[in-house]
Length: 373
Image 1 (cartoon, rainbow, N blue to C red):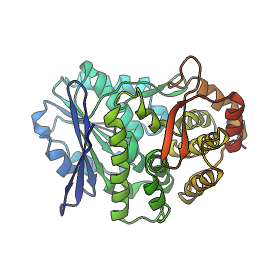
Image 2: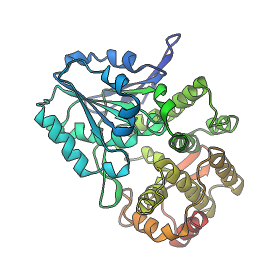
Image 3: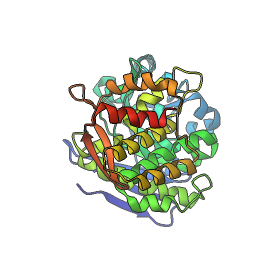
Image 4: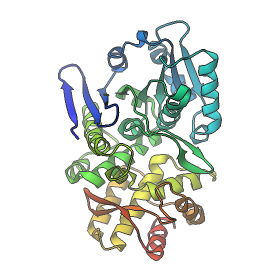
Protein backbone atom coordinates (compact mmCIF):
# COMPACT_ATOMS: atom_id res chain seq x y z
CA UNK A 1 0.00 0.00 0.00
CA UNK A 2 1.61 3.23 -1.14
CA UNK A 3 2.03 6.35 0.96
CA UNK A 4 1.84 9.33 -1.38
CA UNK A 5 3.76 12.29 0.04
CA UNK A 6 3.44 15.71 -1.60
CA UNK A 7 5.13 18.91 -0.49
CA UNK A 8 3.86 22.36 -1.45
CA UNK A 9 7.24 24.07 -1.49
CA UNK A 10 7.30 27.74 -0.68
CA UNK A 11 3.73 27.87 0.60
CA UNK A 12 4.48 27.19 4.25
CA UNK A 13 2.77 23.85 4.50
CA UNK A 14 3.09 20.21 3.52
CA UNK A 15 0.42 17.80 2.37
CA UNK A 16 0.55 14.08 2.97
CA UNK A 17 -2.03 11.57 1.85
CA UNK A 18 -3.20 8.48 3.68
CA UNK A 19 -4.31 6.01 0.99
CA UNK A 20 -6.38 3.05 2.09
CA UNK A 21 -7.35 0.14 -0.12
CA UNK A 22 -10.80 -0.25 1.36
CA UNK A 23 -14.22 -0.29 -0.28
CA UNK A 24 -14.66 2.39 -1.44
CA UNK A 25 -10.98 3.41 -1.47
CA UNK A 26 -10.09 6.25 0.90
CA UNK A 27 -7.61 9.04 0.24
CA UNK A 28 -7.21 11.42 3.18
CA UNK A 29 -5.12 14.58 2.73
CA UNK A 30 -3.20 15.68 5.84
CA UNK A 31 -2.09 19.32 5.93
CA UNK A 32 0.79 20.33 8.21
CA UNK A 33 1.91 23.93 8.68
CA UNK A 34 1.40 27.17 10.57
CA UNK A 35 -1.68 29.32 10.01
CA UNK A 36 -3.07 26.93 7.40
CA UNK A 37 -6.63 26.37 8.63
CA UNK A 38 -8.29 28.30 5.84
CA UNK A 39 -5.85 27.10 3.18
CA UNK A 40 -6.56 23.52 4.12
CA UNK A 41 -10.32 23.88 4.40
CA UNK A 42 -10.84 25.88 1.20
CA UNK A 43 -9.85 22.82 -0.82
CA UNK A 44 -13.04 21.14 0.36
CA UNK A 45 -15.64 23.78 -0.58
CA UNK A 46 -17.40 23.98 2.75
CA UNK A 47 -20.13 25.98 1.01
CA UNK A 48 -21.14 22.83 -0.86
CA UNK A 49 -22.37 21.17 2.33
CA UNK A 50 -25.95 21.79 3.45
CA UNK A 51 -24.96 22.68 7.02
CA UNK A 52 -21.69 23.12 8.90
CA UNK A 53 -20.85 22.77 12.59
CA UNK A 54 -17.62 23.04 14.54
CA UNK A 55 -17.22 20.87 17.62
CA UNK A 56 -14.71 22.19 20.15
CA UNK A 57 -14.20 22.43 23.89
CA UNK A 58 -14.29 25.41 26.24
CA UNK A 59 -10.51 25.75 26.48
CA UNK A 60 -9.93 25.84 22.73
CA UNK A 61 -12.87 28.18 22.13
CA UNK A 62 -11.63 30.55 24.83
CA UNK A 63 -8.29 30.97 23.05
CA UNK A 64 -9.43 30.85 19.42
CA UNK A 65 -13.01 32.20 19.03
CA UNK A 66 -12.23 34.39 16.00
CA UNK A 67 -10.13 31.75 14.23
CA UNK A 68 -12.89 29.16 14.61
CA UNK A 69 -15.75 31.52 13.76
CA UNK A 70 -13.97 32.57 10.56
CA UNK A 71 -14.27 28.99 9.28
CA UNK A 72 -18.06 29.17 9.15
CA UNK A 73 -19.83 30.09 5.94
CA UNK A 74 -23.36 31.01 6.99
CA UNK A 75 -25.12 32.71 9.89
CA UNK A 76 -26.97 29.48 10.59
CA UNK A 77 -23.75 27.45 11.01
CA UNK A 78 -22.98 26.24 14.53
CA UNK A 79 -20.17 26.04 17.05
CA UNK A 80 -20.86 23.27 19.56
CA UNK A 81 -18.81 23.65 22.74
CA UNK A 82 -18.33 20.72 25.13
CA UNK A 83 -16.55 20.61 28.51
CA UNK A 84 -12.79 19.93 28.46
CA UNK A 85 -11.22 16.83 29.97
CA UNK A 86 -11.46 13.06 29.85
CA UNK A 87 -14.84 13.00 31.60
CA UNK A 88 -16.42 14.58 28.51
CA UNK A 89 -15.44 11.57 26.39
CA UNK A 90 -18.63 9.70 27.16
CA UNK A 91 -22.04 8.63 25.87
CA UNK A 92 -23.73 11.65 27.42
CA UNK A 93 -21.61 14.00 25.32
CA UNK A 94 -22.41 11.95 22.23
CA UNK A 95 -26.13 12.17 23.03
CA UNK A 96 -25.86 15.95 23.33
CA UNK A 97 -24.02 16.30 20.01
CA UNK A 98 -26.54 14.10 18.19
CA UNK A 99 -29.40 16.08 19.72
CA UNK A 100 -27.98 19.39 18.48
CA UNK A 101 -27.39 18.04 14.97
CA UNK A 102 -30.90 16.65 14.84
CA UNK A 103 -32.49 19.78 16.27
CA UNK A 104 -30.75 21.97 13.68
CA UNK A 105 -31.76 19.61 10.87
CA UNK A 106 -28.35 18.40 9.82
CA UNK A 107 -28.66 15.87 7.01
CA UNK A 108 -26.29 13.42 5.34
CA UNK A 109 -24.74 16.20 3.26
CA UNK A 110 -23.85 18.29 6.31
CA UNK A 111 -20.35 18.32 7.80
CA UNK A 112 -18.84 18.35 11.29
CA UNK A 113 -15.41 19.94 11.92
CA UNK A 114 -13.72 18.69 15.09
CA UNK A 115 -11.42 21.39 16.47
CA UNK A 116 -9.63 20.22 19.61
CA UNK A 117 -7.37 17.63 21.15
CA UNK A 118 -7.76 13.87 21.14
CA UNK A 119 -10.96 13.96 23.19
CA UNK A 120 -12.74 16.30 20.76
CA UNK A 121 -11.37 14.50 17.69
CA UNK A 122 -12.27 11.00 18.94
CA UNK A 123 -15.71 11.98 20.25
CA UNK A 124 -16.66 14.24 17.36
CA UNK A 125 -15.54 11.70 14.77
CA UNK A 126 -17.64 9.00 16.45
CA UNK A 127 -20.64 11.35 16.59
CA UNK A 128 -20.29 12.10 12.88
CA UNK A 129 -19.66 8.48 11.93
CA UNK A 130 -22.87 7.34 13.62
CA UNK A 131 -25.26 10.26 13.03
CA UNK A 132 -27.59 9.22 10.18
CA UNK A 133 -25.20 6.26 9.71
CA UNK A 134 -22.41 8.63 8.86
CA UNK A 135 -21.87 12.24 7.80
CA UNK A 136 -18.60 13.79 6.57
CA UNK A 137 -16.19 15.21 9.13
CA UNK A 138 -12.86 17.04 9.17
CA UNK A 139 -10.27 16.73 11.93
CA UNK A 140 -8.73 20.01 13.06
CA UNK A 141 -6.39 18.87 15.87
CA UNK A 142 -5.18 21.59 18.22
CA UNK A 143 -2.73 19.71 20.48
CA UNK A 144 0.63 18.16 19.70
CA UNK A 145 -0.70 14.75 20.71
CA UNK A 146 -3.72 14.93 18.41
CA UNK A 147 -1.69 16.36 15.52
CA UNK A 148 0.81 13.52 15.65
CA UNK A 149 -1.57 10.68 16.45
CA UNK A 150 -5.20 10.95 17.57
CA UNK A 151 -6.58 12.81 14.53
CA UNK A 152 -4.84 10.55 12.01
CA UNK A 153 -5.87 7.02 11.12
CA UNK A 154 -9.65 6.89 11.46
CA UNK A 155 -10.08 5.55 14.99
CA UNK A 156 -13.08 7.07 16.76
CA UNK A 157 -14.63 6.37 20.13
CA UNK A 158 -15.54 7.19 23.70
CA UNK A 159 -14.85 5.72 27.12
CA UNK A 160 -17.35 3.43 28.80
CA UNK A 161 -17.43 1.34 31.95
CA UNK A 162 -14.17 2.86 33.16
CA UNK A 163 -12.35 1.66 30.02
CA UNK A 164 -10.58 3.80 27.44
CA UNK A 165 -12.05 4.00 23.90
CA UNK A 166 -14.05 0.83 24.43
CA UNK A 167 -16.98 2.01 22.26
CA UNK A 168 -16.18 3.26 18.76
CA UNK A 169 -15.90 2.63 15.03
CA UNK A 170 -13.32 3.04 12.28
CA UNK A 171 -14.17 6.03 10.07
CA UNK A 172 -11.96 8.24 7.94
CA UNK A 173 -12.29 12.04 7.83
CA UNK A 174 -12.54 14.11 4.69
CA UNK A 175 -9.24 15.72 5.71
CA UNK A 176 -6.91 16.40 8.63
CA UNK A 177 -5.57 19.96 9.06
CA UNK A 178 -2.68 20.25 11.54
CA UNK A 179 -2.21 23.98 12.11
CA UNK A 180 0.78 24.38 14.43
CA UNK A 181 -0.36 27.90 15.42
CA UNK A 182 -2.79 26.20 17.82
CA UNK A 183 0.18 24.85 19.79
CA UNK A 184 1.09 28.37 20.94
CA UNK A 185 -1.66 28.39 23.59
CA UNK A 186 -1.09 24.88 24.91
CA UNK A 187 -0.07 24.62 28.57
CA UNK A 188 3.49 23.28 28.87
CA UNK A 189 2.31 20.02 30.40
CA UNK A 190 -0.14 19.39 27.54
CA UNK A 191 2.55 20.20 25.00
CA UNK A 192 5.02 17.76 26.56
CA UNK A 193 2.36 15.06 26.64
CA UNK A 194 2.34 14.94 22.86
CA UNK A 195 5.95 13.82 22.66
CA UNK A 196 5.00 10.41 24.05
CA UNK A 197 3.28 9.46 20.79
CA UNK A 198 6.13 10.91 18.70
CA UNK A 199 8.68 8.88 20.67
CA UNK A 200 6.42 5.83 20.32
CA UNK A 201 6.44 6.09 16.52
CA UNK A 202 10.24 6.12 16.48
CA UNK A 203 10.47 3.16 18.86
CA UNK A 204 8.20 0.89 16.85
CA UNK A 205 9.35 1.74 13.35
CA UNK A 206 12.27 4.16 12.90
CA UNK A 207 15.55 3.95 14.80
CA UNK A 208 16.89 6.85 12.72
CA UNK A 209 14.12 9.10 13.95
CA UNK A 210 14.86 8.01 17.52
CA UNK A 211 18.50 9.05 17.09
CA UNK A 212 17.46 12.44 15.66
CA UNK A 213 15.07 13.07 18.56
CA UNK A 214 18.04 12.60 20.87
CA UNK A 215 19.91 15.44 19.16
CA UNK A 216 17.37 18.19 19.92
CA UNK A 217 15.81 19.75 23.00
CA UNK A 218 12.22 18.62 22.62
CA UNK A 219 10.96 21.44 24.81
CA UNK A 220 12.72 24.21 22.87
CA UNK A 221 11.95 23.36 19.26
CA UNK A 222 11.82 25.94 16.51
CA UNK A 223 8.76 26.07 14.25
CA UNK A 224 10.60 24.37 11.40
CA UNK A 225 11.80 21.61 13.72
CA UNK A 226 8.36 20.82 15.12
CA UNK A 227 6.91 20.68 11.61
CA UNK A 228 9.63 18.26 10.46
CA UNK A 229 8.98 16.05 13.49
CA UNK A 230 5.22 16.11 12.85
CA UNK A 231 5.76 15.24 9.19
CA UNK A 232 8.03 12.30 10.01
CA UNK A 233 5.70 11.04 12.74
CA UNK A 234 2.79 11.33 10.33
CA UNK A 235 4.68 9.36 7.68
CA UNK A 236 5.24 6.49 10.10
CA UNK A 237 1.61 6.34 11.19
CA UNK A 238 0.27 6.64 7.64
CA UNK A 239 2.52 3.83 6.40
CA UNK A 240 1.33 1.49 9.16
CA UNK A 241 -2.36 2.40 8.92
CA UNK A 242 -2.44 2.25 5.11
CA UNK A 243 -1.58 -1.45 5.20
CA UNK A 244 -4.00 -2.41 7.99
CA UNK A 245 -6.83 0.07 8.52
CA UNK A 246 -9.00 -2.06 10.82
CA UNK A 247 -6.13 -3.32 12.99
CA UNK A 248 -6.08 -7.00 12.09
CA UNK A 249 -2.29 -7.13 11.99
CA UNK A 250 0.56 -4.62 11.84
CA UNK A 251 -1.53 -1.61 12.96
CA UNK A 252 -1.44 -3.21 16.41
CA UNK A 253 2.16 -1.94 16.62
CA UNK A 254 0.75 1.54 17.26
CA UNK A 255 -0.53 0.26 20.60
CA UNK A 256 2.96 0.07 22.07
CA UNK A 257 2.82 1.57 25.55
CA UNK A 258 -0.96 1.67 25.49
CA UNK A 259 -1.84 -1.61 27.19
CA UNK A 260 -0.32 -0.35 30.42
CA UNK A 261 -0.84 3.30 29.45
CA UNK A 262 -4.60 3.20 28.95
CA UNK A 263 -5.13 1.21 32.14
CA UNK A 264 -2.89 3.60 34.06
CA UNK A 265 -4.65 6.65 32.62
CA UNK A 266 -8.07 5.40 33.69
CA UNK A 267 -6.86 4.27 37.13
CA UNK A 268 -5.19 7.63 37.80
CA UNK A 269 -8.34 9.40 36.66
CA UNK A 270 -10.01 8.27 39.86
CA UNK A 271 -7.40 10.05 41.98
CA UNK A 272 -6.72 13.69 42.82
CA UNK A 273 -3.78 13.73 40.38
CA UNK A 274 -4.88 12.20 37.07
CA UNK A 275 -2.29 11.59 34.38
CA UNK A 276 -2.65 13.02 30.90
CA UNK A 277 -2.84 10.50 28.08
CA UNK A 278 0.73 11.10 26.92
CA UNK A 279 2.06 10.91 30.46
CA UNK A 280 0.39 7.55 31.03
CA UNK A 281 1.64 6.26 27.66
CA UNK A 282 5.19 7.39 28.51
CA UNK A 283 5.12 5.28 31.68
CA UNK A 284 3.41 2.50 29.72
CA UNK A 285 6.22 2.49 27.18
CA UNK A 286 8.80 2.08 29.92
CA UNK A 287 6.81 -0.79 31.44
CA UNK A 288 6.43 -2.52 28.09
CA UNK A 289 10.08 -1.91 27.20
CA UNK A 290 10.99 -3.44 30.56
CA UNK A 291 8.74 -6.41 29.76
CA UNK A 292 10.58 -6.70 26.43
CA UNK A 293 13.86 -6.85 28.32
CA UNK A 294 12.55 -9.44 30.79
CA UNK A 295 11.35 -11.52 27.84
CA UNK A 296 14.86 -11.52 26.39
CA UNK A 297 14.01 -9.33 23.40
CA UNK A 298 15.36 -5.85 24.19
CA UNK A 299 18.79 -5.08 25.60
CA UNK A 300 19.17 -3.32 28.93
CA UNK A 301 21.21 -0.63 27.20
CA UNK A 302 18.31 0.20 24.88
CA UNK A 303 15.88 0.21 27.80
CA UNK A 304 18.11 2.84 29.42
CA UNK A 305 18.10 4.90 26.21
CA UNK A 306 14.31 4.80 26.13
CA UNK A 307 14.06 6.00 29.71
CA UNK A 308 16.53 8.80 29.00
CA UNK A 309 14.63 10.19 26.02
CA UNK A 310 11.34 10.10 27.93
CA UNK A 311 13.02 11.93 30.79
CA UNK A 312 14.49 14.48 28.37
CA UNK A 313 10.95 15.24 27.15
CA UNK A 314 10.10 15.96 30.80
CA UNK A 315 7.55 13.15 30.87
CA UNK A 316 7.05 11.00 33.97
CA UNK A 317 8.92 7.71 34.35
CA UNK A 318 7.02 6.25 37.29
CA UNK A 319 3.59 6.31 38.94
CA UNK A 320 2.42 5.54 42.52
CA UNK A 321 2.28 1.90 43.52
CA UNK A 322 -1.26 2.35 44.88
CA UNK A 323 -2.48 2.31 41.26
CA UNK A 324 -1.30 -1.28 40.71
CA UNK A 325 -4.62 -3.04 41.34
CA UNK A 326 -6.49 -0.58 39.11
CA UNK A 327 -3.96 -0.99 36.32
CA UNK A 328 -4.16 -4.79 36.53
CA UNK A 329 -7.97 -4.66 36.36
CA UNK A 330 -7.87 -2.33 33.37
CA UNK A 331 -5.38 -4.47 31.47
CA UNK A 332 -7.53 -7.55 31.95
CA UNK A 333 -10.29 -5.82 30.00
CA UNK A 334 -8.08 -4.35 27.28
CA UNK A 335 -9.88 -4.49 23.93
CA UNK A 336 -6.87 -6.16 22.27
CA UNK A 337 -7.11 -9.20 24.55
CA UNK A 338 -8.12 -12.59 23.16
CA UNK A 339 -9.53 -15.40 25.31
CA UNK A 340 -8.53 -13.43 28.41
CA UNK A 341 -4.91 -13.34 27.21
CA UNK A 342 -3.16 -9.97 27.03
CA UNK A 343 -1.64 -9.40 23.59
CA UNK A 344 1.46 -7.27 23.99
CA UNK A 345 3.39 -5.05 21.61
CA UNK A 346 7.04 -5.51 22.54
CA UNK A 347 10.38 -4.24 21.24
CA UNK A 348 13.11 -6.44 19.79
CA UNK A 349 15.23 -3.32 19.43
CA UNK A 350 14.65 0.40 19.02
CA UNK A 351 12.78 0.77 15.74
CA UNK A 352 11.77 -2.91 15.59
CA UNK A 353 8.57 -4.07 17.32
CA UNK A 354 6.43 -7.18 17.36
CA UNK A 355 2.75 -7.61 18.21
CA UNK A 356 0.48 -10.30 19.67
CA UNK A 357 3.09 -11.44 22.15
CA UNK A 358 1.86 -13.36 25.21
CA UNK A 359 3.95 -13.22 28.37
CA UNK A 360 3.91 -15.02 31.75
CA UNK A 361 2.09 -13.28 34.60
CA UNK A 362 5.26 -13.13 36.68
CA UNK A 363 7.12 -11.10 34.04
CA UNK A 364 4.11 -8.80 33.64
CA UNK A 365 4.06 -8.25 37.40
CA UNK A 366 7.80 -7.46 37.43
CA UNK A 367 7.38 -4.97 34.58
CA UNK A 368 4.52 -3.21 36.38
CA UNK A 369 6.43 -3.08 39.64
CA UNK A 370 9.31 -1.47 37.76
CA UNK A 371 7.19 1.61 36.97
CA UNK A 372 4.69 1.56 39.85
CA UNK A 373 6.69 2.38 42.98
